Image (cartoon, rainbow, N blue to C red; front, side, top):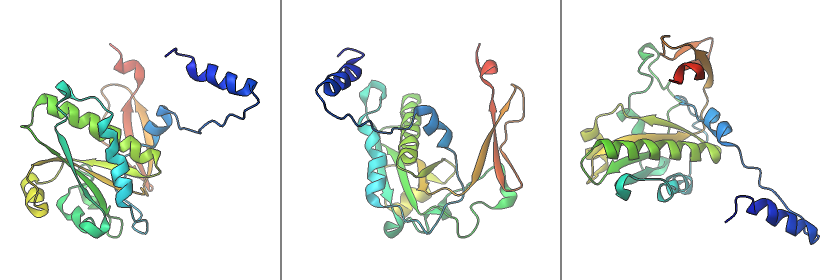
Length: 211
């Protein structure tokens, strides 16, 4: 298919008197900027199981090392165990004094990611691709996602009766934090911090990322 197929097809339709409606799709940069790690969620919004399934659906479209497709997913909405699942997780490691999430702001929907094979560098790469892709999909459909790996795997596996060991958890909901990125030079302190109700996340500037 030629690179300009869509443009040519639009021109053909317009020349035939047809109205062309363009889908208002957010750019990747927009999705990336909105894809922030919220640790406070609006508990009045109930994430539906169909939304979790939509988020997981990216996994049949993304790359996989040796095409092993070794990841499997357990979905929890508020009715199926998500309401109190947050007790297994440790959030805001750089801000222990805040005891995040604050009471009444806990996420209540989760995607638990497991693996059918022994953990390896290849499986970890697949895991990273999957988590980022699912987080971006969550943003695309108007939600937010928080990637969590700070939890006791065996405890979660036993609590959910999983045959596979969990590698990561994606908390899903309507984020409530006010988050800003801060451009910093290489060598700066990269710990996130909070000031006057805003969560600040240092990011190394582009010119220092290039070799």
